[in-house]
View 1 (cartoon, rainbow, N blue to C red):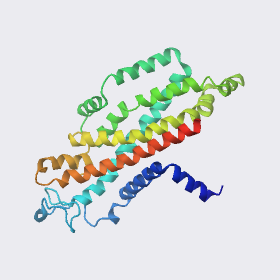
View 2 (cartoon, rainbow, N blue to C red):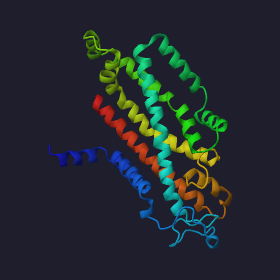
View 3 (cartoon, rainbow, N blue to C red):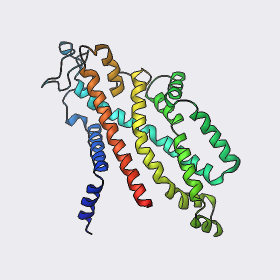
Length: 278
């Protein structure tokens, strides 16, 4: 089968996955090149254009400072994608490493790591994240720290369970007989076989990170002015909900659509993984 036919066949069998990739790619392009789709500045105040409804001049209307809402939402895309992806990466690495160690060595080390996981799991995600932000100074740095500290446990549990199964396979036993070090066995024989599940979860976890970041910004604990962020914009618009509904509608739609894109990618990766294992 030619390369072009393989691509067509893949698209036909994974339409939702491809749709998710297209959505995410569009948002990434908006985040990288916001100036190409708007000629306003996100913090450009115009007292004569306050709370104007969507129009040909201001596609998404204006806020209470007369700022072009379309521009603010577009520029906020960069911040929200950074939050979603950036808040996922450190827990992904940390949780995967701890899951490998816990599942491979077992015993007291496994018990210690899993008891720590249980402690963190006993607190709701958002409550623990908000508590950490409240202890530190509110802002994007505190937002990242809180999400890094509470987001690793799911990866640890997932990778640990996969590692326990994989380490019993014959090729791992063969590697031990050949005298390979534990580090080589973990990195060369086990990690490639447990990483796919972690990646699938990570794609979906980006959505959770984006929603959590927007929620904390909405509460005033995340991104601070003058930076544009979807949750912060929604928070600003709640006061004018009855007279300027567009301030909350459009950032909410962008948050929903971007989350849909990453969710479709996660579902598509999950389907591909199940098909590969059959």
